[in-house]
Length: 544
Ligand SMILES: *[C@@H]1O[C@H](CO)[C@@H](O)[C@H](O)[C@H]1NC(C)=O
Ligand SMILES: *[C@@H]1O[C@H](CO)[C@@H](O)[C@H](O)[C@H]1NC(C)=O
Ligand SMILES: *[C@@H]1O[C@H](CO)[C@@H](O)[C@H](O)[C@H]1NC(C)=O
Ligand SMILES: *[C@@H]1O[C@H](CO)[C@@H](O)[C@H](O)[C@H]1NC(C)=O
Ligand SMILES: *[C@@H]1O[C@H](CO)[C@@H](O)[C@H](O)[C@H]1NC(C)=O
Ligand SMILES: *[C@@H]1O[C@H](CO)[C@@H](O)[C@H](O)[C@H]1NC(C)=O
Image 1 (cartoon, rainbow, N blue to C red):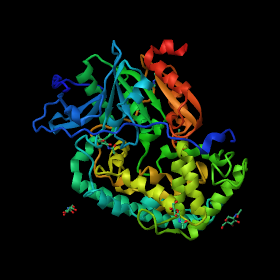
Image 2: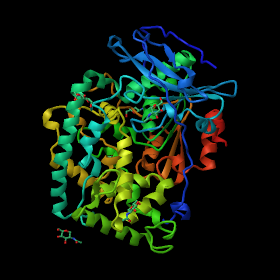
Image 3: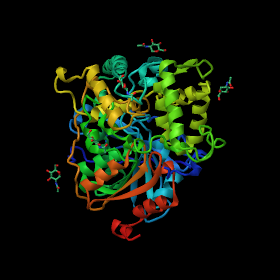
Image 4: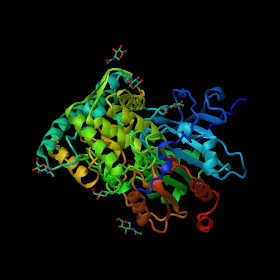
C-alpha cells in the first residue's frame, strides 16, 4: 500500500512569534523498553518549497509509520538563508476523533527522534494522537547535519585514549585538599582545551555558517512550523520529551506559551542554568546535579548479594564497604591504569574511565547487573568488559553526525564577551574542584565522558536566536513534569525549580526511584498518569 503524497503550502512571509531504600531487585533487571528501529531515506529535491512535506516510499519506513521530511526555513529570522529539511516519522492515530500531533524527543541533545514513533509510545500517550518522531536540527536524517570530521573513523581516532574518552583522573577523591589533585587536573584540562579547540576549528572549516541553525530556539520554531503544516494554523503544539527533551519542552512553553498544548517533560534539566551555561562550562552548571550521589554515594549494590550482584561479598553488605572497595579501586587505577589488551581493540582503563563508567550506569538500573559484573571483573584484574562497555557505546554514539550535541549546546550558551573571558585551565579546574567538593566527590569531574559538553568558548558561530527566559510563562493547559528522586544526571531539584517558576501552569509527578527518567524503571502508576494527562483536560487530570 502506497503512502499518499502530500504537499501543504504555508503562506510565506508570515511572521511567527514567537538506601537503603533501594531494594533488592536492583541487580537483576531485564530490559523493558525496546524501540523499533527502522530507516527512512533522506528526501531528495533540489528546489524544495518551504512548507512542503516530502513523503518517502512506504517501503523505506518502519511498518505502521509514514516517514519523510518537512521543508522549513533554515533561518526563521532571515528567510533568505534557504531551507532545511527536518526528518519525520509519524505513527498515526488509530482512534478517532484524533486529538492532534505529539512531537517526541529522546534527549541528548543529539538523539534521533524518528525511532520513537512506535506502538510503545502510543501505549504511553494514547491511540487518538498522531505521534511524530523527528530528528532535530543537525541530527541524523535532518539536513544540514553536523559533520565536522571526515567520517566517524577520523572522529574515533581523534578521541581514542584522550581525556575526552577516558575522563579526568582524580588521584583520590577521599582527600580533595591534596594539592597534587589540582595540579594533575590542570594538566588534563590543558589537553581537554586543546582537543576542544581543535575540533571547533575543524567545525568552523568544514561546516561554516551551517552551524548557526542547530540551537534549541530554532527547533522550537520548527515544531511550531511543522504543527501548522500538518495540523493547520490553529493547532496547538503538543510534546513529549525526556532528558534534554525537557529543555526543548521548557523552551517551547516559555517561548511560545500561547501555542503550547499538552506538554510532558521527564528527567528534568534546569533550563535557567542550561541557558546560562557560559564559557566556563567545563562541567556546565546543569551538571550541578549529582547531589543525589552525595547523600546516597554508591547506592546500588546493597542487598542483592554476590550471586546477583558480584560487587557485593555477602547479602546485606553495608554499602559503605562496597563504596570503600570501589574507591580503593579508583585510587589504584589512578596510580596504575589497567591494561585491556583483549578488548574490542587493545586499550586500557584509567580511574577517570572507571568513574565515568559508574556514573553512566547509575542512570540505567536495568543494566546494573551487567555493570556490576564489569566492575568486579576489572577489580579482579580483567578490564576487558569494562573497557568494551565504556568505549564501544561512545564510539557508536558518534555516527556520521559527529558533534551534533555540541552543535546544540554551544548554540544555546552565551558567547564569550571578549577573548579575555576565555578561561584558563586553572579557572576550569577550579570549577571541577568545586563540583567535586559540592556536587559529588565521586563524579564531580566525570560527566564530560557521557555528555561531551564544554569548549563552547571556541565554537566558531552563534545562532540567529538564543532564548534565555523568562521561565515563568502562563499556560492554558499546565505542563506535566516527571522527576525521579534518585536520577543521577537530571536531579529532582530541576523539576522542583520549573514547578516553582510555573506554579499554576505545571504539575509535578515525583517518582521515588533510581535511574535517569521515569522509563529507567517504568511503573504502571506513572504510565497511567501520563496517559491520563494526554487523555483529558488537565482539570480532569487533577482529579484522577
Ligand atoms: C537515524 O534514522 C534512521 C531512520 O531514518 C534510523 O534507522 C537510525 O537508527 C537513526 N540513527 C540513530 C543513530 O538514531
Ligand atoms: C576524507 O576521507 C576520505 C576517505 O577516507 C579521503 O579520501 C579524503 O582525502 C579525506 N578528505 C580529507 C579532506 O581529509
Ligand atoms: C589530606 O591531604 C593533605 C595534603 O596532602 C594533608 O595535609 C592532610 O593530612 C590529608 N588529610 C587526611 C584526612 O588524610
Ligand atoms: C576477561 O573478561 C572477558 C569478558 O568478560 C572474558 O571473555 C575473558 O575470558 C576474561 N579473561 C580472563 C583471562 O579471564
Ligand atoms: C516572570 O519573570 C520575569 C523575569 O524574571 C519577571 O520580570 C516577571 O515579572 C515574571 N512574570 C510573572 C507573571 O511573574
Ligand atoms: C543551578 O546552578 C546553581 C549555581 O551553580 C546551582 O547552585 C544550582 O544547584 C543549579 N540548579 C540545579 C537544579 O542544578
